[in-house]
Length: 312
Image (cartoon, rainbow, N blue to C red; front, side):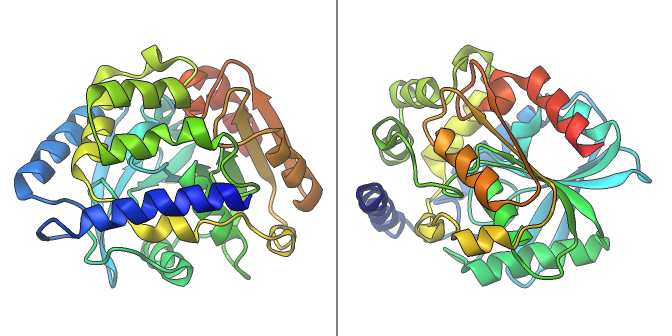
């Protein structure tokens, strides 16, 4: 465990040192306006992969402007989507049609990484992360809503669910990073850090090969956006805050929880599912065959159906 944390800390420290060599623009995330513009263009192209009607909205918060993509029937139950690191809300393109059929969906871009949310800060404490999402939920007057979180989004969803008197109903965690255990296969997972440090197409391929069982399924338009997120956007030190939750914290979660991991996941192992079943009082778990960390793309149809059935 400590070896994994040590290696992770070294990577993030190097990334953090690299960050501050660059001149700040209008927000923390991007180095230069030209690069931000190129990334946003790629983001908009990825959004065209959503084959349903949607609306982009912005909510002003004390931490920065939040970007939310809203879809689905207005009177349906609310579903909040929390994406993975550097993936942005466009990552849901293989899932959004199924998830929006019976839910009013709010896909939120995390504010201190590539996306359309703006942030003046380089990192947020756990308390500030909770406060930021609470501002958004209060703005929309969300109550008893469901959450689907992928990777880091799964960690954030778990953090929110541990809070007393929170308004979450059901919780779906798709290969949640640093939630039940530290990174399982640190050597393979490190390809993502090297992509961030020295971005090029060869390292992109290595990263996607490590994180996806079927990297060829990733739409080229989205793949380009993901590459530009790693090439142009700064990293943040919040990764160091993402420690696995204690047994006591997990026991606080009484909500119905579904945890899915891929059988080729480099972030989680079966140990994650054992931890979930042991400490979450109302939990279902499943391993998705022929899927990696990007299981929502690797096996989108199956994952979509499992989530929809669980949320009914």
